[in-house]
Amino acid sequence: MVDALIERYPELWLSRSWTTRQRRPTESEDAYVFVTTAEFEERIAEGGFLEYASFLGNYYGTPTLDAPEGRDVVLEIDVQGARQVIKKDPEALLIFLQAPDADEQEARLRRRGDVPAKVEQRLAKAAEEADAGLELGAFVITNHDIDETVDAMWAVIEKARAARGRNGL
Image 1 (tube, rainbow, N blue to C red):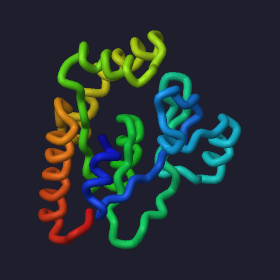
Image 2 (image 1 turned 90 degrees about the vertical axis):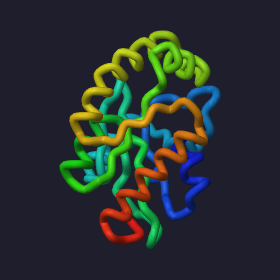
Image 3 (image 1 turned 120 degrees about the horizontal axis):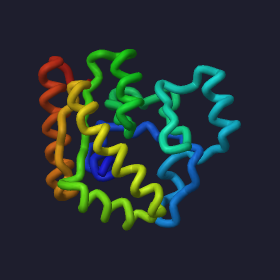
Image 4 (image 1 turned 30 degrees about the horizontal axis):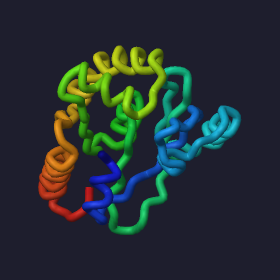
């Protein structure tokens, strides 16, 4: 979803997250920066993350930002990360994407190659995160269709940009 957004709108820039989990068989090599736990923890000690969290036994984090001039930064993060970002930047724009229902979410997780135990853990976590996203003031978008969801995300981004009276967030 985020890749489609970035591809369509070049004024956006995706910060590639780090993770200690193993790459899924269906996942591209550049989906994340895949590192060891020791490498991740070294980066934590150096203060090298905007946000990071432990999620289902693995670390995930956004490295300190080095975005190209004039482009808005897009972070693909969970609720834990969103809490950290909003503390550092209370005006950060949060968009929470959700599947149409639990059955569809389960099917999507299985298609991407998650093992059954991880699917169950992610489904349980998703139920918790939906309420947390609302508490953080996120815009909630239900992902029925990639093109429609990208259009909806862009509409939220454009509205926020206009409200701030500038071209960038």
